Length: 82
Image (cartoon, rainbow, N blue to C red; front, side, top):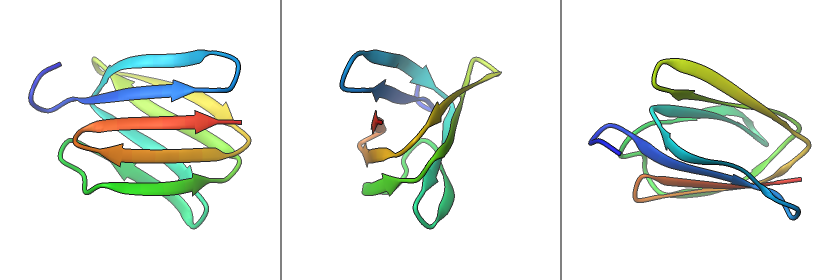
């Protein structure tokens, strides 16, 4: 991981969906989508149904979710999805 990347962990009760270094993440929060980049302020947010998108080495990836919770702390984003 370099100085402008985040560690992203997307998990469900059944399995690990994704774990790795990313450039940015867009998360479907209850009040709307929000983006997370390197050095984002810490937060915890519930999720609504939607799509998590993230960029890995210039390629955009996505995961559809029905809800969950996201935590951002010290350049680590952990998302537990339903």
